[in-house]
Length: 589
Image 1 (tube, rainbow, N blue to C red):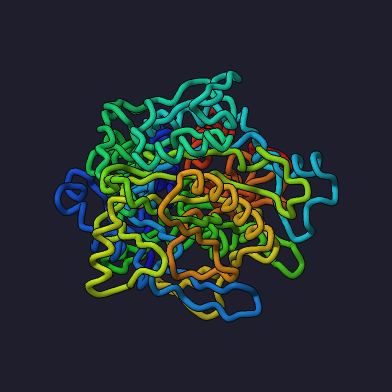
Image 2 (image 1 turned 90 degrees about the vertical axis):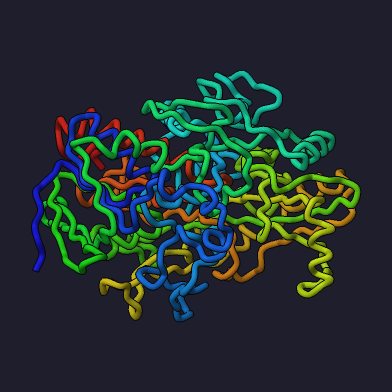
């Protein structure tokens, strides 16, 4: 038996950074909101405290903040001829769970996509010809532009308290910042994080060989800061435990610290945790959703939450799964190319490296992901792709901080992997190692997609989401090109030894690469080619809105957080100003 609850103005599925931000904006406009979160509540004052938060085994190795694979997971295969199998332990990517979602354990690098990224199909066609794009590359222009999103980028920067150095302030290029970025109306809310010793070496070498280095923008204040909701935040303490851990300094951006302190006690907001949403109730004929069915994971009881509006704000994989299982929109068929839900799934194509310096002490235990130096010379359309055999690109970054005591034990190639000699080598090299990364784009391909698995089910009986994904020739050529540019800088630093690691030709789900999953419910200009319109509103139900990276038509050469935050603010504003006053389609096809 399903217990029916009192209707509210909006129910929001997922209480990560986009879901909680959306809830805050709607309650400020006077709407009643229920936030549903499958995982636990995350109260920093209780959980993110010393010494427990620095338990590297608990958080890094045993993945305390991630979805429980015994409750929900996905199946994976490299191509549609294979049989997909369930992921029993997260490896390549790490979906978060609980209030705050994946931002509880993200690294915190905070980017805006480049202006050309938003018109990438048109840009490539104009620069290289109508036939330049391969037939199986299903990239698309975004239905919004960088200029339209810039005010929302700015607001999201101020929510997160981002630290960085502008390189393009209202069209004026500024040395020391990223001169390739789109024009921003304001400087970053906070000055850049202090650069690690390795970052300074990397930046100096990059400049010497003719590139344009700048400090990486970091989603945490470098100084005490009060954000747009009046929440006082701490500053980065360079503790070295950002990745896979929450922030003990109340600095790194997550909804648990940056929004919930003012939302939690709002009488118009109700938070329900351990609430596993089963499906969205959909009236196909009326093109409306009426609410959701959710399961209390503590008791097993089912509830119906009626709502005038449903906002789906989960992780990329969860958003797509919910749409497929609820029967909203036409599922994508890779054989015919028809359908949209599950189409244009993309990943992030990263390849990294390590260098060792026998005569330098770099103190890698100090720092944060924001202490690196990057350069953007080979990102997006910042360079000429003529004759290269690929499209896309990414940023290149290097530094030496934030290496935890267990996981930060890199060794030169050929070193022993265990035993007394291994211990000796880890002591020798721990203080003298730098790491590098190339974070490349993934341009959508017809063969990479998401659908429902025909065999395996989750804890409440739904088919698991099935991922079909492999790197393409375009991805590998792009990534190796970035590595070749990285190698120029590494050689200029004159290390004792170094190694660069291209991605294997066949993607494996086991070792970690990146949590940057995008696509599956892409935004676009018409219902034939997309799941939602420019405001995240479903073409199939005008009172259903989506937020998050599942809206991206493809993945560009940055992590998705800054862009998905800007789109969330755009959507929230449109709902409050227009949809609430006159419910219905916000864009007519």
